[in-house]
Image 1 (tube, rainbow, N blue to C red):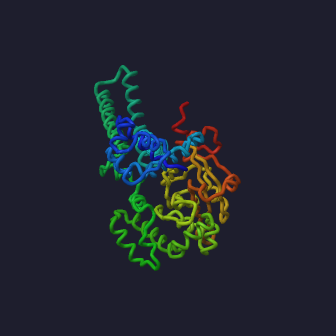
Image 2: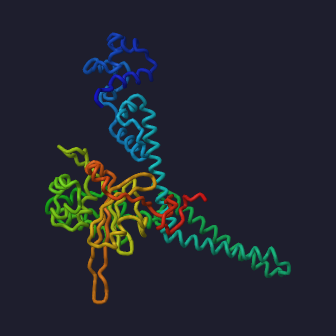
Image 3: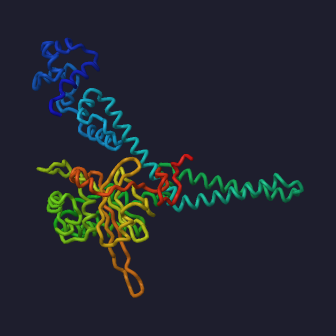
Length: 448
């Protein structure tokens, strides 16, 4: 903001302690008129006066001098942006935090809780629509209920059943009821967000150890960024995780080797400077480094978030997400963002440019997608032949989509307006867009 709000913070904290302006001035050893000027931001203070006022209010001087917490300001700005609220007074946000610190914290906490609930809903949708365990459980439950219904109808409508026959019917009902109870118990345990070994094993398809590995490193491994990094560095990294599934360990090793190769081909400092100069355009970056576009996608998705940028408009690097799939839509690699969940096994919304690229191999596609909750992302999609062809067999295809919600920091407004805007969903089960020609499943959000 243009002027300091130090006085506003002093006034709000004085009122919170039920002190009069005169009383605070007396404690701090200054005149009431001077205190009045300070509280209305007409006089700046520092040094002894600031320390005296802070001591009189029984607070740390940093609470007054450093202003509103920057992380809190960022969260509130994000809340206004995600809600699409154009009427929120963003330019007065620091004043709001300074005057109402409690309400500000509450607003940020509610926003975070809303995001957490949205993420939980998406994970639940993943389980409902794609998980083989859930599908099998539902099939078993339907079979149990069908047997129970048929048996009870026979007992209710037939009068000439012998004692021996009715005994067998009741025995069958007891058996099926026990099976139904067991299935429901397992299903409830499956959806219970606990840390039990049973739940972990059942939800392995939802959140694998390989995903936990990458998330724990925030998709960036500094040791592999070093020039001429030794391949032996990968072994201790994997050893600390002790993958039980040899398939996952091999996949992790393959991804880490790719990370090392891409980092060597596109050194961090040179890549970041070139990315800033080319406005993070993957096609231009691929040309600059003579690299594969999918490798450029991978490099952008694995940049650190705490990298300070000097002499540039943006304060930090944009945060990119990435999803890679084969020609059937099966997921090969995924790095989701907090505001855009990604499928773990099967495909997401069929309108995503990721799938359109499959029908246009070797043609870069750039567009903006907008989710039903109002978030928008700039996307770069590209599909290419990945080899494996043989006589009588076509080559396989691999598609990837890079995306970010931070595109406004490096994409001019005029350029953004020229890009096609696609209104997409995440997947059909949690998409409220009722009029969609591409819908393949009913939404659980449909109230009709």
